[in-house]
Image 1 (cartoon, rainbow, N blue to C red):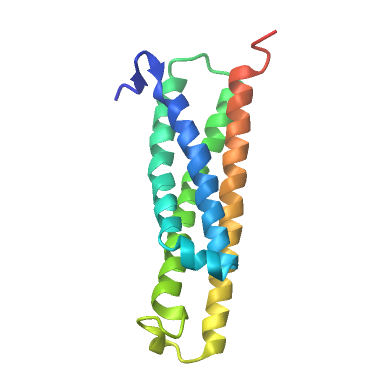
Image 2 (image 1 turned 90 degrees about the horizontal axis):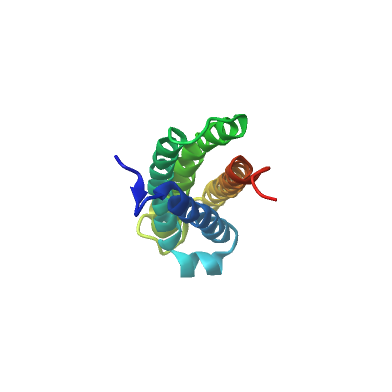
Length: 164
């Protein structure tokens, strides 16, 4: 595929979408993990944001690989490309855990949930809720750190020593 629009590489546009969506999905997921009022208000929005981020990550990587074949190879570009490959597993984990968290609270965890009778023990429900919440927060943090590291390395690859 030709990853350009009007003569400009689409990777540059797509990275902005990823840089916004991944941390935004991570923030929404973290808020729903630790703040019940936010969970009720945000609801399905957190998994939808995580899904949008998940869709955009491989598209952005593909567009970046296309662009890398058209610019001079440098060690900084190599570092950026290596780091970029670690984001997809984090995006998958963020989407999966955000969806699990939403489904857990929507269908099981609360007393008035559709399948709340599956787990009668409040202790078990609390333990599962805690484990899911901790995993969501950790994956959200890791995904956001990955985006920052990838973005910083990409910025260095493009701009370091290239202007006066």
